[in-house]
Length: 281
Image: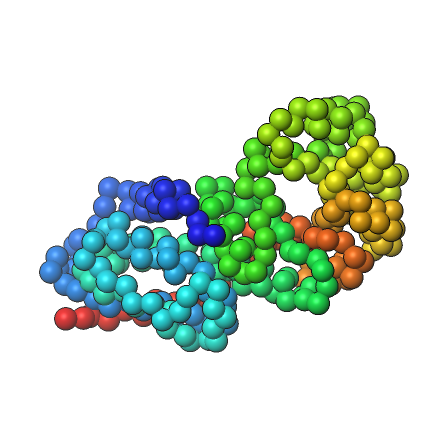
């Protein structure tokens, strides 16, 4: 599923406005208006590519005459020093847009690359890698798309996509049983309902109250295995909390159905993509 085009255009417009301000003074002073250039995006490390459809939209907002030649597609795993795409056109517009385009592509490729590592780490188990809402503010559509590109799956896009009863909701509702009762009774839209459990006793209570999806928060491997036995297929089980590449395989092998990883979007380090520019005719 591609990201929402209207939302992407909004993100790009905001990012360009943030970077350009009143104008690209340096380019206007140094570069003739008639000058043309070629700009190549080249990765300096192995990556999973993401953002190939975003980069052209950035440049096109500044000049409709800019031409993009793609040499890869989103989801490709490429070796170091692959030319990902070439940008041809008015030099001023290319220079003005390059940082915004690069920032977005580095971010998206970082999330896709990190996600692919988690997906690969659990290969052969039934566990699915999920993202969370711990995305970069203002970039959620891009972050979520990058997770999908890396082979992961999206959990909730927004708070209105599902009912997730967390510990604070339980504390204010009185109990897991009461929280589930209220959620089920008021769920006229038929949204998915999931309840967070910190202990095996809470898992038992949630199952008894009719929970069909349970988030197992920061449980040990032994506790996760016990929760799988308790549920015995009656509810989908999601493991969450401080999941790393070193631990995700062990978590998957406990038999849980999915593993949510906040690090996919809150800790992805931008990949190294360089820009090579030359004068073109």
